[in-house]
Length: 195
Image (cartoon, helix red, strand yellow):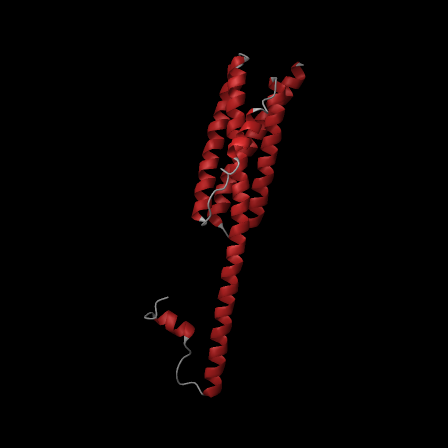
């Protein structure tokens, strides 16, 4: 805090020329404003902690999807379905970009991404979750996209109107997730009609 600015001085020190009661009220008003500022800062810190936790959950989910789509892309290529392999690889790249942007926002908010904790067990679980056939991979992907959409809606509900940078980030990511879900749903419907 700089005491040489007029704003700072007027904020913490009442104006001179007031009588004893006026100075007392001014001091009380200053104390009340300072207490409100401390409460507001504490509330913002609590909100940031909860938001960082949600963003970290979203980051973990994105990394899960990156691994899932990379694995599915390889399996689809082995199944000789190149258009599906390309789609899964494109999704993996987009999910990786989401993860990078979420990580950057977590750091901007003063947090540290914790998605690395337990990464080896987590990676093993994801890689072993490769569905044996194309319809199974698409169903699994739809389920994962639904979980992502749910997380992003929860984050959006928390930040809408008072954290514009996070809101804009989440809206952009959510649009891509909805597009993935729509494409997967359409492909799932095609495969159902064929079988």
